[in-house]
Image (cartoon, rainbow, N blue to C red; front, top):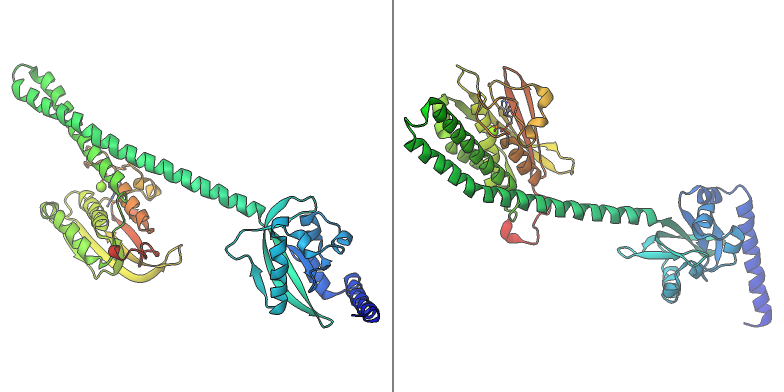
Length: 403
Ligand SMILES: Nc1ncnc2c1ncn2[C@@H]1O[C@H](COP(=O)(O)OP(=O)(O)O)[C@@H](O)[C@H]1O
Ligand SMILES: [Mg+2]
């Protein structure tokens, strides 16, 4: 290029920049869009020279609008990435299409004082007076990154505490079993040899002691069951829910016979579940429906399902199963509390139990990312509704053995 051409080029360039500058000054809709954008906007030319910025970019990078216009886009890139950036910029100008930069990669920008901050950048080509410019929309994601990091730390802490608690519950309940077994056994033996020696009151104390031991035995057994839910590897399979319901009913056959219960099982949908856990879920719910019956009224229990009905919060379709009884019911203000460990609304004198059954149900349903809730009218019966996702979310996609 000889000098004349050079001057010509510069003259053209100056008039283009003047046009651009006058657009900056005037009431230009493009300018207004850039200025009002909630993120930093930097317009640069093919050589990487900055030709327009918005106030958000000024605040983000710490340059004034004037000093920005003397800069090069590479000045905004941390020194260690500058070399590679020029080549990428040329690549973009070679095939200018809108794109986001650094997908799946951590991207950093550099302030006027040299400090660096994480960013997300979207690039848009702009054709302006025959020249292709690049509009970079820049978001400072320092806050988001920090929040994500906090969340990750919080989640892993929760997970650790949860694992500790679970193994504590399981070890404690397991280790408590042995001494308790001995206490109960010695109590029985003492009762056997003490007839006539302990007197009526002594025998009463002893009987109460043995009953308390039996209670504790049930508590520990149920706590152990609670702590075990979902502890092993996932065993999700697609099956008709009729099977675990049938198995639950056959485990309860004695009680069904004793109470003269009538149980109607409708057509039940299929879903991807852990069969053993879901059998336990139905057994607990139907067991409660049998137990909390009205005096003199044979239990009438309906187990009904509906598929593809509800949409879960996770966006999946679910299947719904309802277990409805005609028993004593409960005060609906406690519909949440009954799913907590040890929470019972009826006295042990009237209905034996540990108050862990529904907590186990809740844990099983949570393990499936489902939902459970209860409705009731005292004296007229209770309805428990379980909603399970039709399929487990990509649970073990890479492990075909569990399917
Ligand atoms: N089908 C039902 N009808 C009435 N009350 C119920 C029913 N199921 C559960 N409940 C209430 O919820 C409480 C908690 O249930 P659960 O955790 O299974 O404990 P448990 O069966 O050992 O009492 C019960 O004690 C009872 O008060
Ligand atoms: Mg129960």
